[in-house]
Length: 228
Image (cartoon, rainbow, N blue to C red; front, side):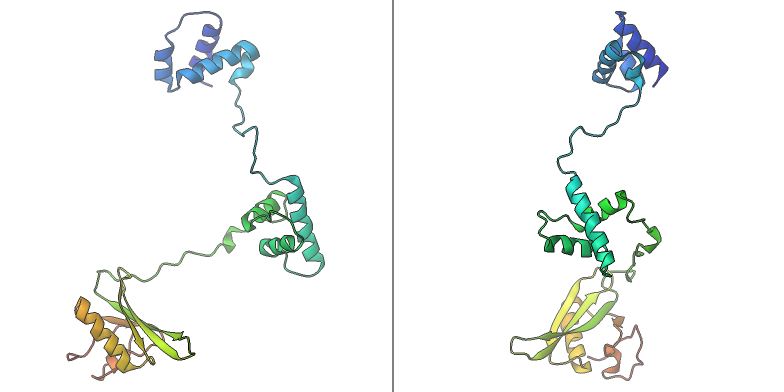
């Protein structure tokens, strides 16, 4: 605690007249905080200046001891039976046992960590992946095909063309199969609405648009032939 605040609080508690507003402004505290310290000093003495816990007196949403005990017990049961005893398996076991409400996976993990049942391993945290992004909008398109089953069981292919910068869906084309002819039909529809691109990026396993008619070599970035 700042010694100037301590000295002023003790002085005011003893009846001295002090410019409290100026002191609070200089020390960066509120008048309410200052007078709270004065009241504590009058009843507690020097103990009024010790750091106090900010933990709330009541925590209605805190997990109760019965639930914590059920979580730890379920983990031991699963381990004794030779099953996986991670948070997801524990939630399933508690649901089967009729515990209501069933704690969430994150709650189970937190309880196990607080009880020393789990040691956090930050190195196991998956690394964030950064997807490819072209340098300019509408400068490179990506084409991919996805099989889709109709209500009667017929298999069709949805050809999707995305802008590799903005991720805009420039065309979604329904075809009977993932063929070069259908790929060019999808590209022509996309170019009708967004202009002709100089670069195309087919995904792995997709037919390269450059192979459709001009004998362009297969690659991850191909240029279309000069004619449609």
